[in-house]
Length: 270
Image (cartoon, rainbow, N blue to C red; front, side):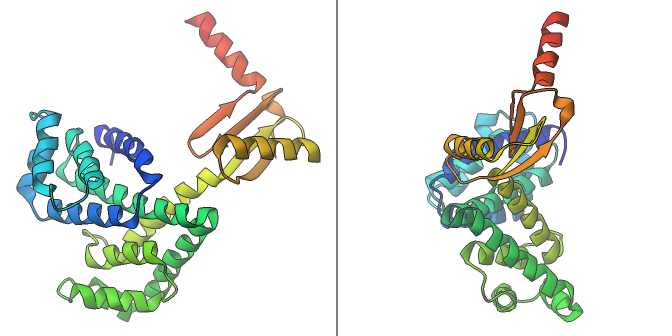
């Protein structure tokens, strides 16, 4: 996914984030159901990605399709996607799949914090390892004519310790891999877990090693700022000249001398 589709997905993920604070796993399930409706209707996909249509008209079209079938939150999330611009009919489905999986990952995070994400990643990774090591299992799970419930039941037996978020993602991968092998799709879900885990790691760059007291103060300040217990990853980078840079997920807090000099240069030039 690239260009306008990538930008639309990024915007949709930003719109989804506030909903994740209270989201239940049912939201992810409903988004996957909506994805199934899209995948089963080529005409609808073309209509939703028609550049000549107004965004509000596309959103209304999708809303009419899912109203009464899913929750208001799922309808709003899908409508936000429909209103955006997409480079291809495939891209909107890929985006909806990403939002559904992200919701399941966020539920695991809300239920167990960083440990919940670690557990989810481990369960998904075990599935890929077990299936990847057996040609017989790969054939059974790749068979498009096999009964969906039977494939899901087999998959669950491979990872009996899997929690509900992992079971939902594994079921989606074996029942609706959308042109991929189930292990490949689960691999994509693992990447989403890894991205979410970065929210719990503060990458700190300083010009000289921190004392124990400085490290404790920084830990406390960042925990209070982000409202969760972060893991600090501190690196010494003398080229910063002075100050500190902190990166948590996609957010960067930069108070280094180099950053201030760069900003001064921009203002002088501009």
